[in-house]
Length: 371
Image 1: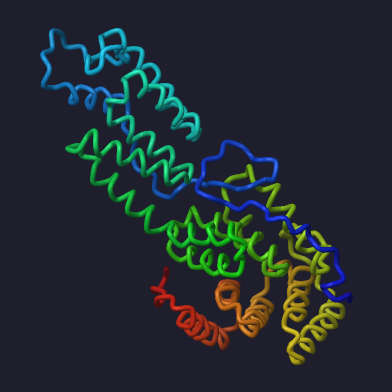
Image 2: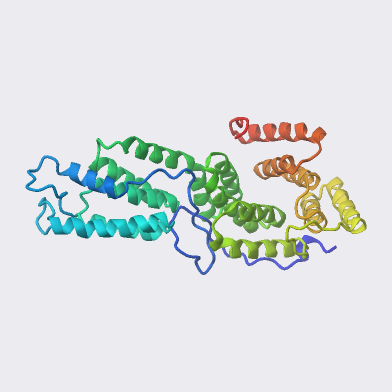
């Protein structure tokens, strides 16, 4: 089999990576910029809108039972009139329908229109706009609107929830954002370590972002077998079908780079034992001769072509190659996958111990059981 270096190189311009910015559709480069967050909190419905609007004007004299008006006044500080509250309520209901349909970008835009009608005086709508941006993974915007909500409605029952969202987003995303910064600075190896760390603290439904970025970082480092694994994990975990084409394209490119040309469709495949044994032998020889990069790619070829795309034994061997290459965070990933894929019991404890040792070497805290 030809050495890895003889395969055509992937173009080496810096590809975009997943970020916290909002996206409504796939960009020309197929950048993935967002997936929904886990555990969406309740939003304020139409009754909540009316209640909080009313509360914002409760000290004003009311001549009727109609809630305060909802239309922006040309006079600063003037309360809206009754006709305008109906206008804003209609816009608000459109925003709520878009939110319920999962169109968070449209919902955020429409909630903003309702807020504009009110002259930006209603805190409840700021909360809903923040929820939309949080679902779109646009954390900076989400934090901005949660803070506006807290400022406008400091006594609301939702203030504590908003503060908790802010705290969670700031803390959970810090390793991820550090990885984005390092990647954009061209430090792909350090970025990969931080994206790996981000996987430990990010909400589960945001982890596909980190897996995609790990694929991009390793691709830039020409670690094609490693990139392949991360792209595959992204496809497995991601629920945003808009970006499946991009991920699948990268998977095919990475397979081409390491000499894997067979399509894997998830069905049980017959294993050509003779061919697999020959390539496995080449991989083991390369490992013994400390040609770990070559060995890793050969083990990946065995797994992809002859073991249905995933095999605990090959994952263990790939982890060992990465450990020998000093790629601690990547080695952790493959040792964990080996355990997940059911490696023999006698190796599981060894995998766990190596994971513990590698985490310690990286300065990472001990991983909580089951996390």
